[in-house]
Length: 453
Image (cartoon, rainbow, N blue to C red; front, side, top):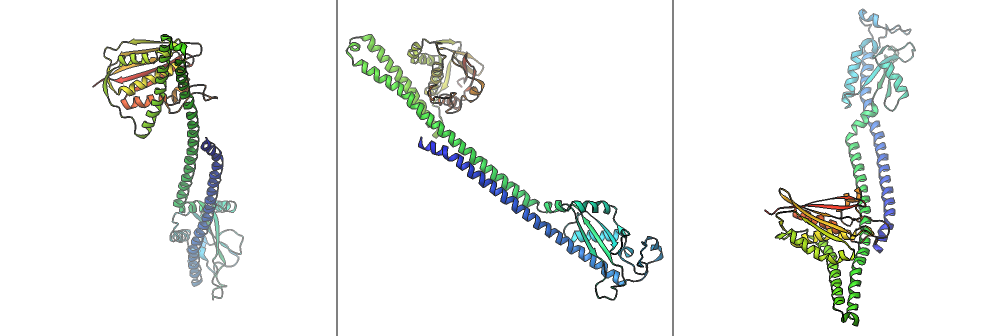
């Protein structure tokens, strides 16, 4: 009991500590991921700028080397520039749009980002007359980049001649403007393996937390079951022990000693209570054996109808005490089966014991045991007129330690292992067992036992 209380008190504290630990780990992971995302974004942008700078440097050096006027067939493409661009040809006059686009694409490829989406334009730094050259989607992408800096970035580069060079004042002062799209998406894709790893790690942590929490609840439930089991076992064993003790004391009295009828009645009472206690102890021992080694039937050839006669004799006194009846409707022509006699006897003893134990108040128990032949099985039915069970109880009736009761642990007798034990015996023999029940009307257990081979 002390262990149960300790577990019960510890569960809320353990749950809080584990929850705080889980939240802390997730927060730290998110923080680390954001830090890595920012660092990776800076690395990507730095790599992009390094390659774009090489393009810019190449364009500036080429522009400074060539001060001749381009061929006349390109004159129509030149912008009107108040600063005399005709005499001082710039990048926009020396290169076509596909040339610049190809250079930038090569730059992104060298940066390890060949699928980067970008738009670009070339403009005079000192003019407000628009762009000398602009890719088709530049205006739209530039507008978007001005408002959405998370997914887009603007990179502007001067295309002026090198300071101090002979051509510093002879070439136009231009700018290359590059708008790079999907920056965040690319950064996230580049961290794909890391992101998957973090997600899996977080999932594992949550799974571990869930399993731990469920294990704690299971342990709490087992502690409660253990406490109930000990209480009920004490109560169940105490009753026949007290009855046997009382009967033994009465046998010593002079009045009983002189009455053969009373002696026989007390002897029958002692035998009945002893059988009842033996059945309970045997169920506990067999259940413990099942946990350790499992059930290994020692099969022998027996008659089910003869077995039922033995069961009737065993429960005769208890039925008489409750004014109950046991009726047999044995229609099977061949009732021989190959089973473990002791285990099968215990199985039917438990079913009959439950039928008597769970009878309705003021309604004497009425038990019907029937048999009939199937093609490969003998079908046995054990029917009663007891309190019955609802659908939820029926679905859990074969669970170990399950007892359909609330409140006082003694309001329904039993250990909660009887039907679990029945199911274990049935499974060990390849027997199919199912139950149908209606609250207030009783239950019917249907057992299909394979025929002898």
